[in-house]
Image (tube, rainbow, N blue to C red):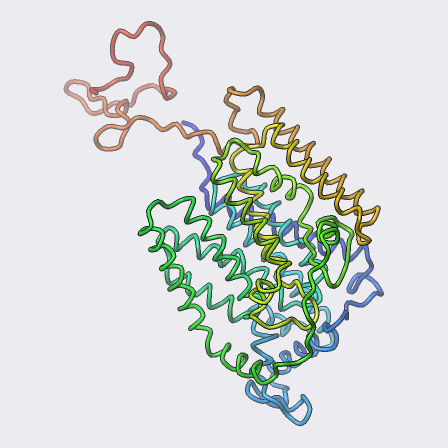
Length: 494
């Protein structure tokens, strides 16, 4: 008998584990090479991390160990006393935050660093699981794309010193997953619980993730459901799930909203979109600017997403919708009305492109859509490479682009093309079915034995006259034909 196929859930779990391990190893290795705490003498207390977030986690440690002056309602350690629930809902309501209680109080910096690494790894695992839920594909490719999402420029450059924003990085794939459940009419209770968890962890980035997940669900509904009534039914299920989830998180959200209303307006800065050259430059690695979006998600991921509109293995409408969604979200970053809509209709105090992780997630989903349909042919890959070459050419006019950025961008593209060449060589000439062990073995259809009226193979139901059923000799299925077909090719009645 042939070896049974591994379950889809098991392979999805393998992809999620690969994404988490790859992400954690990359973050730790990068910090070790840069000699950043806890691997070197350089501190991590950049911007508000050392002034606000680490002290807040220290106060949470005091609460967990019963040493705080005050409780969940009032914090006597802040000025002459102030309410603590709004601060808790803004900075400390993440399920990962309580892990600081496992560390000594003198090592709060280390505890916050560990929480940051765990959040980043969890985001990669969640994205890998989402990709395998949307479309079948190789688990290792889903793991690598999930890691590219977790290691996007926004995560490494901006969210690394704003650990509560990383909850939004986790929330986007989780909310997209609840959209998949609504699309299939499954798990309504679990969907509402996931929405409540995401909004409780950090309402600010969860709002942005919800908008992005709604756009992804809209494309999925258009591409997979026919008829206005069925599409409206799916959207209604998703809306009810979102409303119930937000309502469940109201005990945490209500004090935060009331406090934010009393604190606004604060420092105001008019939004000014960055020049197009700077926007293209941020698609390259080794670039930085506080006032521009960190768009880099990995050269291989960008190559797959750029090749998607030219990938003929996919229907034209699929290519147009996903490519159009990527372009629309990218343009929404530059338009003032949509900029305000992304940021809860309040001008951000500081970084003006905090919703960039949503664009990174949509680019990863588009890349997975291209890869799950099979490796792009050479014309599609060349067209995608041409798009990236145009991006690099446009970025050359920006002062943000560096020589290291172009070198790393080209090296990543070369590695992606080399991986494509290896996969194409393993696939062989067009039309030849590859063996199961090759990289896209999941596309080989399963061959099942023909069954009788009771679901059993007819060869096992042969009953000789006057005796019990006998077990025939082992055979392959389907049985090979020895010559011209002159009668039944298998034992037993038809």
